[in-house]
Length: 373
Picture 1: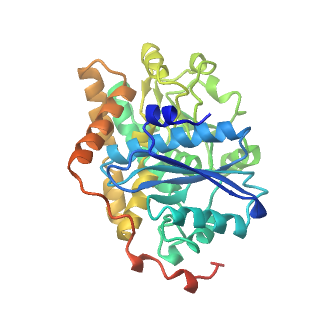
Picture 2: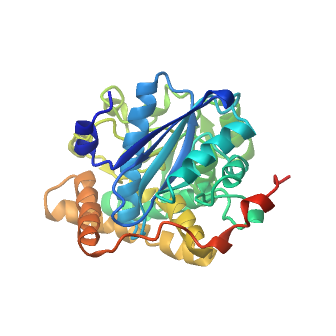
């Protein structure tokens, strides 16, 4: 049940339930700390088991986005949205345009972008109703799919992980188990294979995993249930969250957990358990910030070189987290949280209210838009 005590405990400012039965829209938008700027985060479309599961997911994800933006040095807060529905069956222009009107009603406090189950084509319909959206088709002035940028950040971040836990090893020396080979996971697998790594993959969409293995040499496919038992150097969760949990943590046979999924740990104390087992955890919102960085740059006026320059700082951020954790006897998750919270609290004390509306010239007027073919 959602109540004020829950909002206060998790630090959220606002939660909006969105319903338009005529088009099948059932969605939740959550805004966490917006001290640094408007809440920016992806729209996830998923067939949740219950409304409660959707609510828990959006609360956890929006909080992670606030910490991700703060740690990446971005002037954005944490926002997230979930649309309850099957992304393979329930999408329609009407649904996304109705969702866009709800986004627009927040007046720029939430800036939407892409997440699981959503494509740039879907965001185009949202864009028809609001300018508060990023990650849209490049032909509409956007930066497109942020997935490859997330994958780039994870790949680069592995260097800091290796230096801390497996010094002397290179990417080409590794065996990496990648859970989920969608937009982000698939791009990461391609980068790993190009660098000479041995890769084991799984995906709930078995044909997608098999197709990737057919495309790339040295990729082995296992079932989603078996990915946790793979003997590897790195376990890279790149699908949904809470995959490191009480049932799976004892099965991991790796030295490093570093992947693109959000909220990889089902509970905070699992970071300590990973450390006890000798497994280095790269805090998810630190290593997977590449996609958010890319769309944040888009919001300000897209410059791909600038986006990559900021993403390439991820290894230094991770190294600072690992150093702080060692110096202050913290888990890496605790160190990342403290670094993010320090920036949010500092800026909250000095910054004037943010300018919610993006530049009007960034996208054409709504009435001038037409579907992208």
